[in-house]
Length: 327
Ligand code: GYE
Image 1 (cartoon, rainbow, N blue to C red):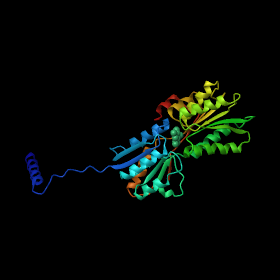
Image 2: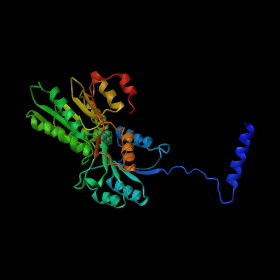
Image 3: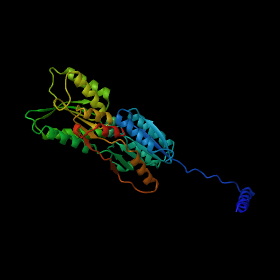
């Protein structure tokens, strides 16, 4: 047997040295190049979202990822997309900062034959064919859940319901839809009033500054029944400004609603300082990868994919649940 194997090895060696025959090295399969234009890193949600995308598009999975952080500026996103087009990437993933102003650059991508996937937020356009698919959250549903919770919490309230509204980055689909849900609910209830709409920009620092300035500019101490914050980072800023001025956040004081349900947000909810957390799931990497695989295989993905989300109140939380959350 040993002898036979030896003869076989010799034959193989001779064959590979025969004139005109080069030993063939296996070509590694070409990587699929993905250009990601992330809008920024303004919140815990965003950091987890970027992380999820990075790990879904690893080299081991067959991808090369070109990642650009636009630092909350649409012009930086447009410049990044143009660069991806020049680099002839296979696919562009775009987390659009705001809803308008994308048509020309998306047309350029289409002319170059590069499909664009919108992730997290969406855009407003006359021409839906400018993007292949959108993977994100249903912000309207989220806002409606928050409004329904408020209706329930204040259904027996005898007097007015005063709401302080901290908005997300103005003009983003997340802000527009979450704000619209609150405004529609306020229109349905005569006793509800929005005391002020402040631009929290989805960040802790901006929300703190705006809330503090607004509170300090009021002649007396306004009675605030509810604080509607469009994400966790802004909730932390607004709560801090309120608490520093003697307000209590919780069942006996200002009822705070927040979106995202990051670990830090849920901890604040378990303490009772946030009364409702509406989850907004940032872990979209695997779903985005699936959509891109469908495109690569010549399939047509659905136009919209929505992540599954849920609600948390202090009574539904435990330390164990919070510790097990991946973000
Ligand atoms: O809620 C916020 C982030 O677009 C859903 O953006 C996202 C929002 C999220 O900065 O934390």
